[in-house]
Length: 324
Image (cartoon, rainbow, N blue to C red; front, side, top):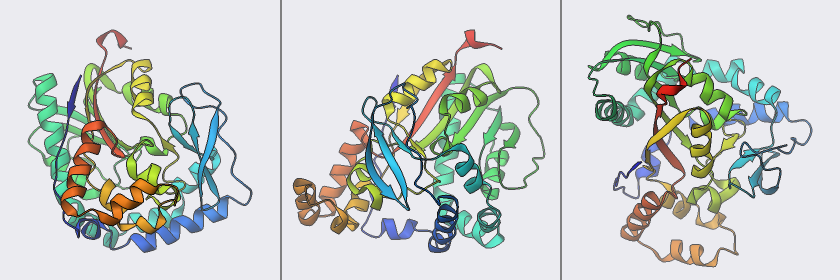
């Protein structure tokens, strides 16, 4: 299995530059939904996808508890399927995210990261499948311009979008099973991750590739900032560890080809929120108070290389023997 690392330098303004112009409004809507659907204390997780029933409360945010699995270190929100569904399909939130203003802002702000995503797909697909043009199934993408970019890319023969809040009709829709499935930033909202991975895999050709990205619960900024980290109910209900992710893919009939930890903002997020660090974290508080931008960059590289960033990208291949 190949591990790849993207060492991207950042300046002190990087975090601000990446902030959504509509972030405060989106957060206000999301928090209102959570408060509406959590009249009572949210339920504790019953069982972790790894099989463990042993949890400890890590933090509480917006009255929703986040629990750490003692076995695999995955973090699970205290949520049930009804709550997550009600949040995901709330008309106010969907209306805001599908608005022209929101979509235009997202396209301007995310253009570079989308180009990097497309390059990641293209080069890894050619490396592992030796294909220059292929059929793509995109699951959960909620950005119109990203869908357009993927379909218009030179490597896309056919394209379909599934389980999305946007109304996008491709010019050449997918026929049959896909060569490539994109599952980007969806798993973090899953209550049944193994079932969801298997569902996506059923639409993929044996030997085909799935590209997955997600927040992970073993990342530096999440474990350090906890309720002050950029994790929100019920946008994030499943924050797996890398150990659990690999186990889930194996159970679903996939082989992991690459793991990438391209997160670039863990250290700077903690630096900008150093007042929120628990007083018991003496070393981290001292480091954040005394370090300069060069130390932050070097520390972020360490987090990337050691798999301790809070964001991961994974390429997996569907086992040929798993042909339905």
